[in-house]
Image 1 (tube, rainbow, N blue to C red):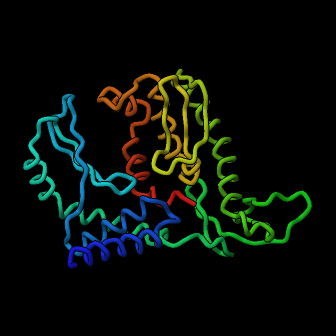
Image 2: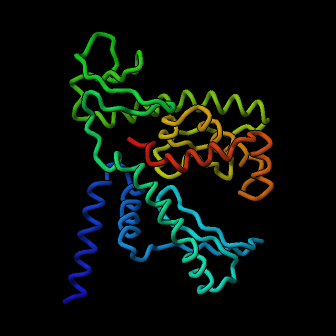
Image 3: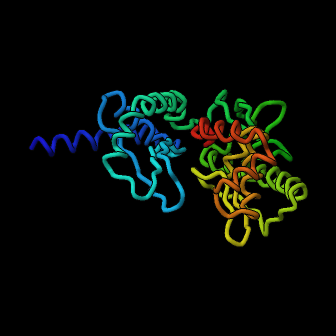
Length: 269
């Protein structure tokens, strides 16, 4: 009976946090749950990734989707991994708490009301509801304000996503063309996706995919992802050679990488 009650409490906790975070995606939900575990000093789950390659050290990261991941050499004993995690536990709790604070505003559903702010190219713009007018689109960004027709209430999220995707297609295509000429790396195709945890990807046949959510980030962060994916046309992995190439092209890439990791939960609608 006690076990059943504990299970129900866990399920209720999960439901409560997911209800608060569902509109902001699974990452928010997971981060809120991890933050609760950290606060209550309960066990924080982690995922182990074993490498058969030349990895010699253990590396702990908190992924964009909230997972705690430990990358280890293939033959590392489980006891050694757990001891490593225990040594890093205070750091993990600190980072989870920092992420939790950043996602608090995102744990509530979008209301799409006057004054609510939306990100575009790293800046936040307030929403203003207006009467439909001749020649006006359903949604427009003008003079630092998002203008939305008042007859679009039922499909407002879809309208925003469509607007973001259109802007993303324009901007990403222009930036890919710029860096393609500069690096002499030419993709087969460019597509806009709705991915939530991957800003970009490069297929085996050199097709590039970019999440429309990336258009909410500043230009410098967009350029980093574009350079990153173009580099995969040349080097199909994340080896030391790959990162050295990225650094040659964009010496400050680490700054952009950290910013995107830190602010990922904000790049959503």
